[in-house]
Length: 330
Image (cartoon, rainbow, N blue to C red):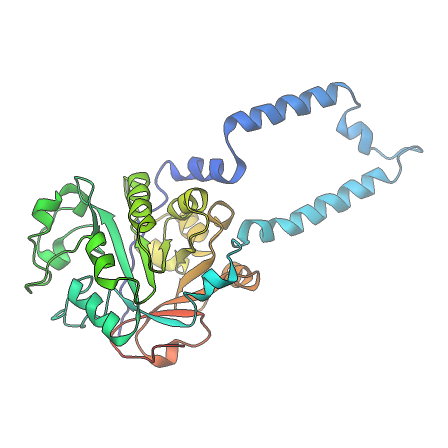
C-alpha cells in the first residue's frame, strides 16, 4: 500500500537568509567581528606574508594547511550534529509505538485527528502523533492537510477559516469534528506520551508561540517535531529543555511536491541540523542517506514514520504507525 505523503511547503524565498542568521548569528555580531579582524590586521603582517615559508616561519604554512584540512573534515560533523537531550527526558519517548493521527481507521469511519481516534489510542496504551496548525483567528487546531478539501469537502485553507466555522465541519462525512489542540491534551491527560507536529505555514512564529504557551501548562509528556527546521530551531531557542525532532524524508519526495533540487537535497539530508540541533530525526521508513545515518551515529534518536506492518518497524527508537495493532512497546 502506498504511504501518504507529508507535504512540506518549505524553503520559501526567505528561509535561506533566516537559517543563515540562526546558524551564524546576527549581522551586528558579524560586523563587530569584522571590525576586530580589520584592526588586528593593521597591527600585523598580512596573512599571506605570515604563511609564506621563510627561514623564520618555515613550518607555519604546513600548520595552516593541516588546520584547514582538519576544519574541512570537521565541518560535516558540526553541520549534522544533533542536540544533547537529558537521558531521562529522552527515555520518556523512546521504545514506544505512536498512533499516527490517533488510532483511526483506514476507511475513516473513525477519522484521523479526531477526539475518538485519540481516545482509542489512549485506551490501547499507544503514544499519539498529531498535527497542529492555526485557524485564521489564531486557534491551535488539530488537522493535517493545508486545506479542508480531502477531509471536509471544502477547498479553503485551514488558516483562512475562523474557528467558529471550523468547529462545525464534519470529518470525512462522519459526525466527528475538528478538535482544538487544548481539547486533545485535556482528553489525553498525560496518560500516554505525545509527538506534536507543527505544520509549516505563513505564520510559523505565531504557531510556535501558541503551541509553546499551551504545552507550558500541560503536565504530560509531549515533544515537538516539524519538517520545517525553522520551527524546530524556534523551540531550541525558546523551549530548549523540551525534546524536539526533525521530520524528514528522501529528497525525491520533496521534489514530487514541487521543491527545487537544492531545497530537496538540503531537507532530505537534514543539512540544517546546525540551526535546529534536533534530539531525534523522524525519517520516512526506508533507506536513509549517509548524512542522516551520521547524525544518528552522533546521538540523534531514530524515530520512523509511517509503519503499516510490523516488519518495517525494526531498528528504531520509536515508531509512528497506522492501520494495524502492534505491541505497545518496541
